[in-house]
Length: 230
Image (cartoon, rainbow, N blue to C red; front, side, top):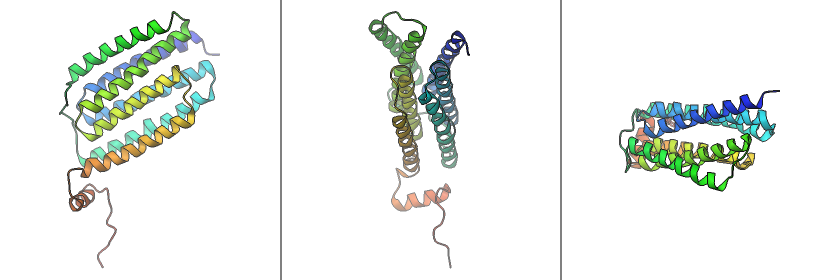
């Protein structure tokens, strides 16, 4: 039997990792680094789900950990990184409204406000419920930080990573506040994969005519020749 205090300590360390990865995503300009850090953030959520599974024994937490690992740690990052390499966009240096420093300061302020608000709603509680409080605060904060990435960046790929980070916040909030039904989490992941595919298409051809778009797909090797010369 794993000591509860050890598991709680591990979860708190993982909370710190979530904060660091969220801050990095919201501030960095290197797209490959953002994809890697998103995968690391998702892996951290997998570890949190497994830690909670060791405490509660809920099979739903184990299923969420497996699905999250396969989809968010392997499939989605690999797909985005591959397409990003094909379209040869290395950095996202243009920002709407908020620069990285301002975004980080607003994120810190949001976390403080959310913590103060939830602390007033939730009275002093035992250790397990204190994890519930911090998990809820981080979940909502991660959603807000992902939203800021979506609104402050110009590249479509970076905006999608903001949406993906928001969904990680929903997942984190669901693990601590309410038991998110597994089927809902699975459907959300399917929607995210579709979103990534559509964004990839738009990233390549949103500013081109149909003919130019077709040429771009061939140039990036995203579309094979369907007609061979006789």
